[in-house]
Length: 436
Ligand SMILES: Cc1ncc(COP(=O)(O)O)c(C=O)c1O
Image (cartoon, rainbow, N blue to C red; front, side, top):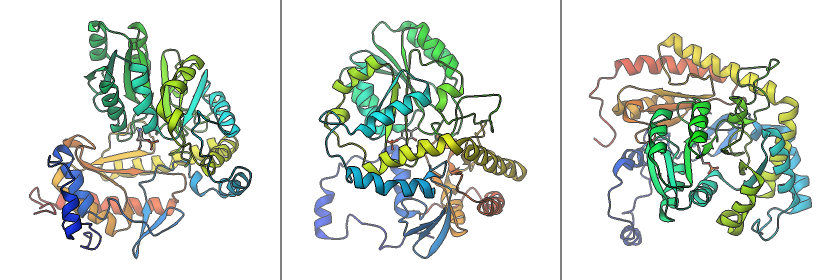
């Protein structure tokens, strides 16, 4: 099902638009052109959602099951979290429009305290989004030193490094979680400070990086390890003999999950995925926090997260403490069901961790339109993963499982995946793309 002409805002639709076109850079989109093409043409990109009902979503008159959201714990739909919001609004209004430098509602102090305890870190600083944090904290930490950037790290980390470069840092790239290559580069480096930037639980493969090895290498070479665990926080946590699932307990993120200490590590993550709330944080020593409060624009100048999000973070903490591990065990079971079902169908995924992020490469990038169409038409909404979101050989789609997905929805997903497995085999390599 293609988007209709009405759905596609055309830059050539009117004389005014033609005028606007002249404001845009003439430079071609380069590697982003395939993403741009899909965004314009495919119904499973930038869908306009008219209504949700649990994990069902309505796009126009078509109902689909949402396997593209990052609400891993299903907190967005939890009645007790929703019910907590009005009281906060009555007490605090809708939005504290001070930047945090001007005045900070006590809610932030309480959240940072509870978060710090949950993580077992020395301190934490809450800012609106991870993107804000990368763009401001990476330059502040790197200064005129050197950043060692995991080539495959999330785009928002790359953007933070570009900003740091504008402020005088040097950026060197190393290969996807290759601590040996990193060690060589660090040994050859003569400048300070040194910052190593990597992803935590990977947003595409669903896998966990070799944290212990990265931490050993960075500590031995006087570097700081900066990890973005956007997808791990709330899902994975400390390992315990009485844990209810291999995700571990308490959802207190990657460093606790792998049993590392925070020594020489800055952990960045957020509430906008597992906790369904607009807030992000970094865990760091108090001295670093105090420095960053003065050195970063989002703390000094940005509007903070809205009160409703602060409310859902606090209600989320309470629910996490009471039922989080049970919810995570259910999420693990549902994810395992999908991974097992895929194994029986002969569908492979890079996911080796059992995390609720299941990328399915489709073998031939030109099949992405047809396979996406099939999923959409059969009522399954996933994230399409074209190049450069993933390397060319990994082009495909990504399923994200949440605790709010029902077993019936998962049965239907497996039925549709069986069809896709067949369709994928049937499609010839010459399947035309939409532009042809
Ligand atoms: C690994 C990673 N980092 C950062 C972000 C951006 O987070 P935020 O929306 O808090 O800016 C995302 C969003 O998907 C992500 O996957």
